[in-house]
Image (cartoon, rainbow, N blue to C red; front, top):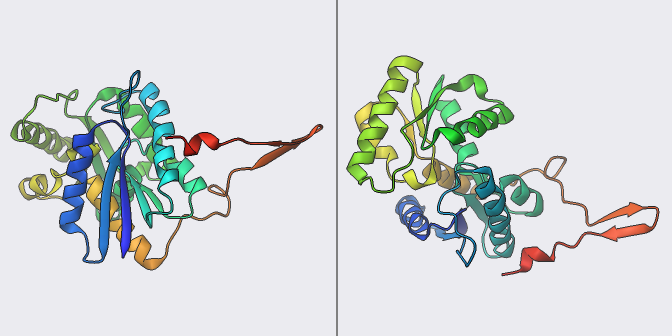
Length: 252
């Protein structure tokens, strides 16, 4: 049995529930999937990660969730398109960790010469641009196109039409051969849009989920050689060894 945890790195319970349902539909017969989210509390609620402040807070909360579930699952997916806390999780965990952005970027690179990322807010486009450079695939990106600022009042059909409009502009003007839906809450739109556009439309949560199933089956885990080697447990200086206290990871 492959046990996969999906972390929605914000306080949107409904989004986590949709992610779980969508992934269960395509899960293999020997795969168990569960989705969770950051619990809101007095003084903290972040329904979307649309700012650096959100990113900083949600990273801490998401890493705690991953750490506390490390012995219950065989792999963890971070289902926020900012790949919230992914590097930290890869560093401290001995099970595979995938961000939906990195998974979809590499998937798109395999099936298209150049691809476009549809984003929900122009403010978050620069970090996405930086991220593809960090992943070494910037030459594959045709464009980042916003389908306008996020509007929670949109129905499924209204948002679908907005996504189609921007995707067609990317195909016509930017040379996009594939499209990535740049947000976890867009889970479920990929297949619908792909049928109308006639090009691959990557749903990042679905792509990461199927890739994680394969990684677990093949026994692949992030390398601990350099970048994601274990964090220091203590630091030496003139006064001796100073221990690092990371007890906050176990706090509920």
